[in-house]
Length: 448
Image (cartoon, rainbow, N blue to C red):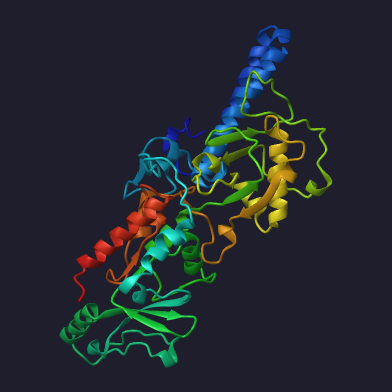
């Protein structure tokens, strides 16, 4: 319908899943027309059916790869993300009118170079390296910030927050009896003496000339919608709030499985496909389709739906020879990650192992007996992250991305994090680069 209306790939409100469903329906209609005109028996031959099944399975698996890359389901991906351009609006246009959006996107999120595993984790690599020397004295850990407040020092006629009254609202109250010039002088003094107060849960108040907010997008969404998290006083601009709400937060779980020995191929990434119909080995050496009559072991009956496609990151191929541990990482994304939310680690582990048992070539007789440890990331369930990483959503526009990275409060309240770097959004490098940019912006303020 979008193409018929002339909107085509420019539409920001049509999902990739909706588009593919329409194309599949078109394909079925065309196939039925061909079958009415051709030899029915030849079309229904087993070889033809297997080829069609393989094509459909591989197409859906590549769709699953897109979901894994974007961190969300295909029903949340806008079609315009795949047209090859960033979304720029005609300033006079209506967001609901797709003709007002011009698609001119680049390779968003594609930071060059291979994916790498940080041994010891980010905390040891980044945080611990900062906690040394004089810098350590400037870092306050394990302090939950409840309120970030704009205030002014005493020279502008407004008293800074008092630790004995940490929840008080600090607002500029010019004397109404003063003239316009006097009010302008007060305003200029306030701009020069703007401070940021951070009210912590412990009661501690930290006063700063500027503040860089790096909390994840999921936490910002909660904050601006009154669902907990940091309270901003005064509230953020409507443009900022709209931008935060317009972007999406991905559902993405990593299931790290440790085994007593290796039984999988030596490729960096392994794709598994599960269907009800078995495909001959000549068609695929990567995916072996399960026998639907196969019974699960008694201890693996408590499983849930993760779909028919699974991506495994073979960490063993990137192993450090000092840490030779047979680990593989299963990736749950989109609806599969949602279904895994609140499930116990044991149920998630058994679901993954059951899938691997059914689809891998020459698996052990009971794969569960070889699994010796399991760890599940739960970013969506963590109150300090509330999601994996940011992504575009249906209706996301360039101005929404711009608003998320925009500073507030006379440029004293800045924002950083992967969500504020649209070019490499969703990557660690995006977070690092946004931090460097925020530091440069603070230096540009010329604060003393």
